[in-house]
Length: 240
Length: 254
Image (cartoon, rainbow over all chains, first blue to last red):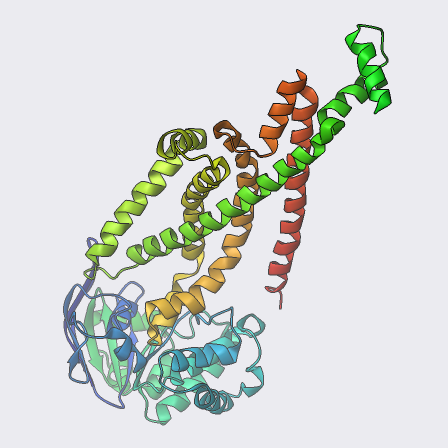
């Protein structure tokens, strides 16, 4: 589904990604872990071109998205993204937050969008918040809304950029529950996280990144119980 | 009227007069004789008219300049549009020249060089003030657009919306809140700066005060009177802006 070939990204003289190659298949749930500054978020943000790669190629469903002629807006409609800081639109109600993009991009008309939004809001247990504004919600509620907003576009893959890092500890669970439910439904997911429990439970594959490269990859079992690389061991010793 | 004539005769004859009599005569001849208050009123109307015209022109110019400059700065690396780059360069020159030269000099060049043959001094003045205000307004608006969290643009774009839609529905509505107080301030500055158009013959409030002062050989009453009118106008608008800002902020505390 997504093919990444020798992806490089530098900010000025700082090399953040030094040749990352990966293949992510449909329905796969991939979790990226690694120390801060290792390039996990940058890798994720390159996948929908929020960062422009300085080298390499990304192919999404047979189409090279790093190609100049590619219509990135069309590609992004199929890739949902959830941010660390939620990034809900504070000037709109929750309903408007969710339905704005599907309606503006012509994916659905208003009634369809509202109907789908209500279904999704029920799924995350927030149907009574449709008329509220983001400022009235807790962090966990905001993040669940952000997930719903991305899902309303009916994406084929969901990118999560540390979705629980900015939450109070007691709210992490409710967001992870939504993500677990999403994983069960067969959604392709790529997730940068520090929640090792979540990675162990949900991931098909765990990638450990350090210094702009994927140092080690494998099933959660292999990575967490039997890491091969010294750097992986050091990292896991610190966080577990 | 008769009292004014009588006391004025006393004063011009050099007879001793009381302070009250002097005040009465000077005030009367500065503001009431020959219905001069009407001239002042006309001056105030012209002042407000020029302010509003210049503000509208300034905002229109400011929006155009700010949007083009922001769009230019936010292009993806490697996807630079050459036309946008060229226009951006021109706009940078516009902002630099306007902000780098005194308003008085701009007025004189516009009124006495570029539009030397025009007799419509008020319009030339309003045009110059508007062009001047545009450069400042552009920076106010650009600042407002940049003050919106970058994550908002990213969120909009990550959902597949294009740049224009994301700007229109997400970024601009949030920027307006940051822009309005500064824009109100620009309005007040502009109101006072209209006094400068008297140098090219625009018949606004200060022009009236100056011609009355010249007519009566008495500068204090007309000029202090004009100052008080400016002050009252600014205080009025400051008060209105305060109400407006409080209402905007009220929507933050939901």
